[in-house]
Image 1 (cartoon, rainbow, N blue to C red):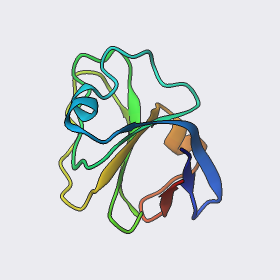
Image 2 (cartoon, helix red, strand yellow):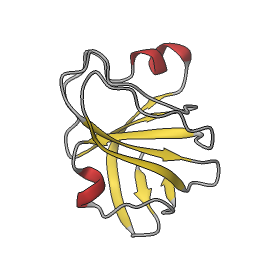
Image 3 (cartoon, rainbow, N blue to C red):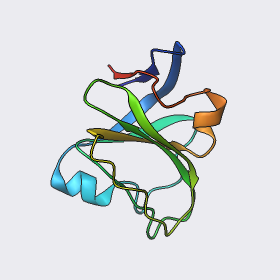
Image 4 (cartoon, one colour):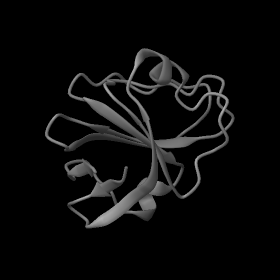
Length: 113
């Protein structure tokens, strides 16, 4: 699977892990090494995230049902809660700094392929 920012014509991640059931969503990135550039975790469905018990910060894109970024969190530190956003249908977790490197902004269209 690949995560692409269609608006900016950039590939955000080409090594994507999918968390789409209760067990994989519950685990998320817990106990995993930090994401590397080009990696992402897609949590689907999801309206919010946390970084409890993680040892590293992450970036997160909240994406609505039309693929639009409705919230972008940069460098969410460990032991934090991200906001709940009821517009969100899925969340893409990326290595810290990925949002800035790829110039992703709210309103951009994200696709999974």
